[in-house]
Image (tube, rainbow, N blue to C red; front, side, top):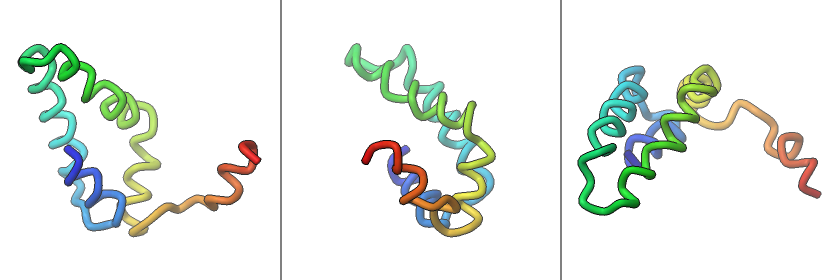
Length: 76
């Protein structure tokens, strides 16, 4: 999952990568030996569910399509 997300972040991912991430996540839930393993895919699959278009745009542009300074201005 991490490697696939890194590829997407750097614009090197493919259109099938999001489906791969969702598939891997669904295979982890209920099958991990560690109780914390079930929690790993939840934030990633949730982000894909709610921000799929933004993630695809990020992948196609080869980086963040949004102004990082403007998106973090509230934290200043």
